[in-house]
Image 1: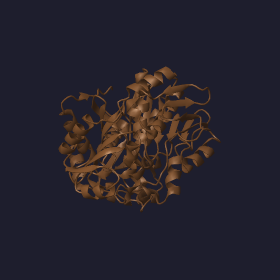
Image 2: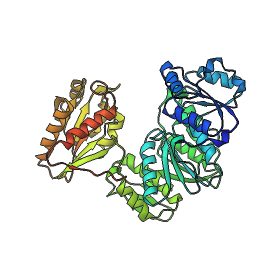
Image 3: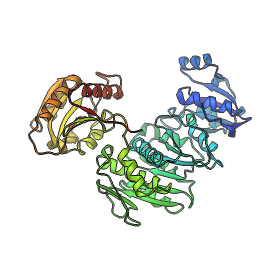
Image 4: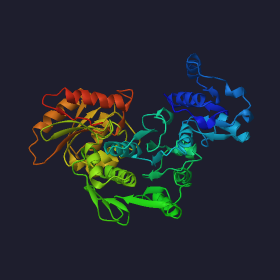
Length: 465
């Protein structure tokens, strides 16, 4: 059941976009007492919604001056490459344009519930899941959703003490004029979604709105590991409490060397050595952000450590499927380009690497600094030969074509490895899109999991909820 949007009682609200979150938005508004005019330009979506009894009205023919609010699906262009036709109509009539996460924020006001909001170019999904897990494992009443998993208005209704841990994309922040999180986190900023934001300056400005309305009673957690975030941190510190974090800068409030997370305010620390789902420098940054959230919510270091250690990770993102002796099987199918695969390759010392599919621009040339870690590569998919060319004279490889063959050969080779390495990784981190063999990276990761668990002697990794 959706959250009832009581803050819109008696108002007339237009809704464009009838996907899963759009359906939830319409239901929440209707249950809250609003008159709703819902539409989607995709005939199938509009027909499906109409058949389900939603108040479907063609917004092309509606006078937007009759609307009190207009709720836009975050996937619909707000500014670039040009505003959607519905946005132009709303702007012309001076109607506020908001998203479903804005409705959630308004419903939380005055309830005693807390809002933790997490954004950034990379790592926000893992950090959201990690923070939610750490808080829940310590016994807090936690609801996790937004851009990850559950749509905002499908979360449990707000009550005093409940903590909402919400992942926000830049698109969602663009549609949240009243965003004022109790804790706001900015992970990092690199060029992304510029077709929607025009340039990095606008993209960064949208992300910075996370903190625009915060005051001294709120907390901003901002990375110092890129210049864009460092600039936002300096500006934000003028009007709200700031906990900076970094895996590079010693002058940050919270730091990590990959082995521990350290709070420089009092010297306390949380080890990461037993947190198997938090391998690599990128996950050290995620752990720093989650520490800031947990500390703010009153957890001590023991509780945070227990949460880190029991975190199962996200599916298809450095996910440990199982092990056989010193061999671990890692599903990183989400790594659909070289930049993403670099994080996985840098996290293990000796790797039996499964890669391939449809290469992205630049191929895997940027990964050369990590080729020495590759004991052998097992190449699959349509561009296996291109990856073979990049690996020639750099690392041993074999073209396997299929996932089943790659997993089988990699497991056999790893089992007979004569090195003195403490751990060997059979790693699926394809550095390529999946569409030549699979409909998406999730199906590719599921196939890897099936192949691994079919091997003799593999002990499946238990996922702790």
